[in-house]
Length: 412
Ligand code: AMP
Image (cartoon, rainbow, N blue to C red; front, top):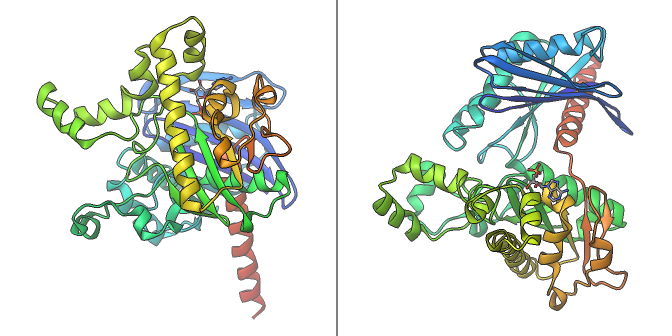
């Protein structure tokens, strides 16, 4: 089954086409349309064994961007199918499902309504996701579409973990609570790590650390998320590329007064100018900081230590939440690749039963690997994530279910 996976941002569109079956999956093509809405939008597209194809042209909206993608998919030279009818389903990454969605769902009018209702919770992402869904429905009305939410995996959090200690009426009125993000990635790496380690997910206590430009840590008990570090928005939690992570609210009100910042100014500050970028003063990229640390640059070292310290604190907290931990999993650009950050985090976790293999960790990147010693009570793994594959898998499963249901109804 060929599945098109779409991830629509406010002015960008990422896509992949995967050939999926119950036993295998193959990536056929992937690409990105950037600067949608501008006269020099850029569409880049890549298929196996060919150089990347790139074209600049005017693309005024998401419908045009998707049209450009569909044209590329059937292109004589760069295409991966003869006819668009080969696409059997479309899976959409949707940022926020609020309290409506506990799992991925087939898209219909009611689902679109609910995604719309969640726009106030994710004003930058949900409107773009909806635009992509509507554009696809217009261009390929007969193809089933599925929504996969960043938040749904964390809907299993208990009330005392997701509630903020504010006046309860704000929860009732605005649904202000902790939601968590990166759900598809946490779920995927938890399942993958358990499978690789020969452990039963339903009996395992896991702490998964998705560390990239955005980072979050999740406590998973028997396959269910019971707490996660991101909250109402992705700003809460650990230090990130450009986000501050946890911050005393007093700092916000102080800066509003001193610097004359309004809500938009504060939003920009904590989302775009903080984290590794703000601390180092020159880069949000972990690789740059590791290089600068080697040259003795104090603020790069400080930024890396702060990042690792935050994550270590969440590991300690979540070990308490879970009443112990069997496995710690690292993923995301930093978690998969940065031996320096993993080393900083895993130094001094022996009290927890972690016997980290520092030698094996050194230089290891981009692979699925056990990083703890054989006798370690707590297993530590680095595992590559693949959110598009989760979206394609959920989409295939849902479409197969719908087909089975339709077949049974027809037989009746
Ligand atoms: P992501 O958001 O998951 O794509 O992750 C982006 C982050 O991963 C950036 O901070 C990169 O510096 C970091 N990263 C990617 N490759 C490496 C690497 N080889 N070593 C250290 N950090 C890396």
